[in-house]
Length: 112
View 1: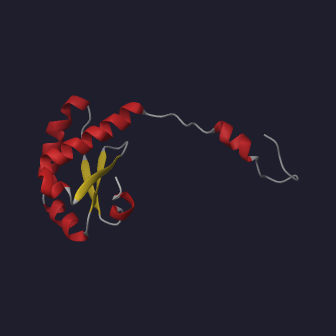
View 2: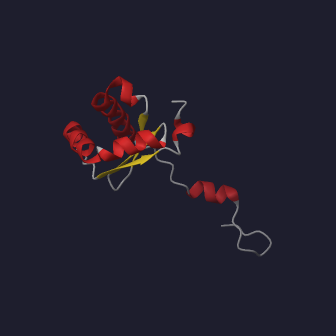
């Protein structure tokens, strides 16, 4: 790596060359399938108040909710939702260990 002015800085072009920008198509397809299953389980009315946001490597599903009330109501049904989702996702070869509900990320995700 090239150094600038005898400092510890690295050139941006050298950093970019070392980035691993692999697109994980399988993970993206699984996320899309999780979104579809979520809509199926909740139905059209309730699914308008919540959306699948992320599925982490440690098998935690993050759901964004329209407000804290929706997040709280879904939280009370979390164990049932985990059970129903795991029944649906068996064909994907994944297991959902937990579901987290976040209403603060709704606005940044509402344009989808």
